[in-house]
Amino acid sequence: MTDKKAVRGWMKGFPHEVLFVSRIFTNKDGSIGLLNLVCSDLTCNGEQVAAIYQKRWKVEEFHKSLKPNAGLAKSPTRTITTQNNHVFMSIYAVFKLECLKIKHKANHFVLLTKLFIKANQMAYAELQKLRTA
Image (cartoon, rainbow, N blue to C red):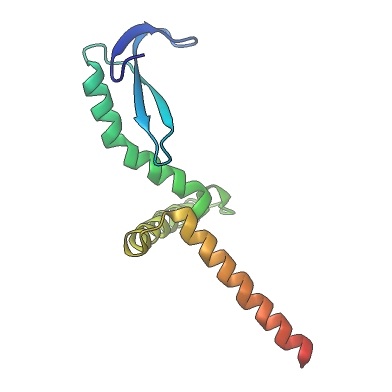
């Protein structure tokens, strides 16, 4: 298997010919990773497809964080105005997480886990105060 080599082919359930590009990379732990990319623009070569995906990857990371970390999918809203507000605040929450990520050099999931642990510790301490009162 060659890194960034484009191969034309057909994908089940898709009516047009596409390009398949495999990316081979080394993970931080030294293991080898494989990322398979698909592109419908047959004029691209493997390098171009890899470059496009590299640019788009930040958008994928944003969407990955938006749903579970900002609660985008858990909207109890019914009207258009409240739905718009919920979407805006979810995007704003991910923006704030991104600022914290840069400041603390930790990803969104690590930051939220730390916040969750701290909140549980504070709640437990308050519970202990109430028991002794």
